[in-house]
Image (cartoon, rainbow, N blue to C red; front, side, top):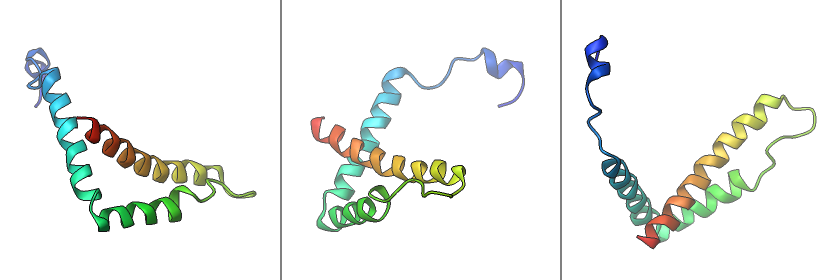
Length: 87
């Protein structure tokens, strides 16, 4: 894509396509992470990352932003599993 012509063309995806893609990823997460190994992996991620302090006294504030980024990945996976179970 380059130039003004590309800006005038319609986007290739419809709203339904985006929702379908999101649902597909949610289902994929559920299939992979509902297994015994997947559950163990999520528990390990939760214990080693999510349930640890985001910041420590005296640490640089950018470390807290970094840690919250890690936490958000785990929360996103958990949310996808919950959504997929409701589909």
